[in-house]
Image (tube, helix red, strand yellow):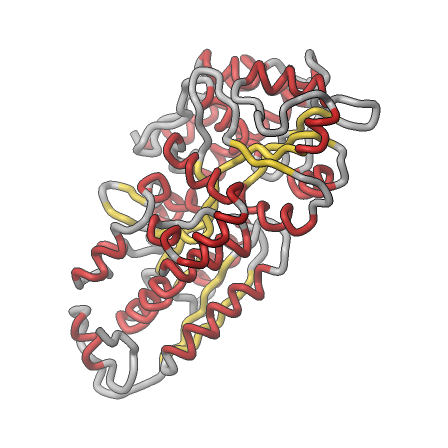
Length: 422
């Protein structure tokens, strides 16, 4: 069916159940989006926008790169509050509660009308839909989504007497591999603890058998015995086992440290995968994160949101853009260019992504890990709740607090913030 918004918007608007306007006008959309990993990814987005505008000549899109996820949230919300036009944005999947609290977004359930669109909304991996679904409505649709994966230097493994085809699968095995890899100027493993320390900590907690929040965003379990044990393990990678540097490890420079041979293993987003492939001068592997009680990683990354203050015609145009950018062909292209997960099974059925993973099977690890992934930490008052947990994690890793003390304080603060939502 032709769904382009042309002329009077006639057939496509009526098919969506919206009234056609009395006069034909071109539609202009403003979209904010973030990039949290390296590489010239704005060029990829610009290419997608150009392709969409070519197919939809009556819709123009001003795609604004707004920095990292936090920068994008602040800029998009500030634009809305100041009356600047903005119809949609890619923002953190975990921003959903804040956006709902401020009544800024509309559910996709209210935007999809045709059977084709309902099938589209059901086409994404379930693990990637968890953060965007609240009270049985879908408020965010996946775009640049990820899991945390283990990158490891196969050349270093071989030099250290380790099997380069057998990365560590458990916490204990990661410590042993880290000790074998450790050298005078080389660490065994690095896990970033700036930028998104809560995200890495959530992975450790999941692996130790505890999810850090309930599905309603109203409770957290930071001070559970399993969470305390998980944070102690992370600290002990440096404090006891000497396989990781003391203090904090920088998110933004860790990829380069891995590429320069400063560490044999690193935990990082799969969104860095293509950059590592393009820049590594050594053979490297990618594996699921090691387990303790179970395997697991939180999902991560950004979702599309449609803003409530846009007109019905703008919302319909926003839907067309979102459907275009999440279509299997574009999802495959984005995955190849970045390393982010192909957001739907159909993306992996495209010829482009099938050829890519045949040549580079590391690209399947993050997708396969979705089977054991859980929703990223997200609650009401999510910014302040995450800040409390971030501070607790960093205080332990820098040696200024013990895990039980730090997580108890974070739990108490979170409970105060969330009391009104229970």
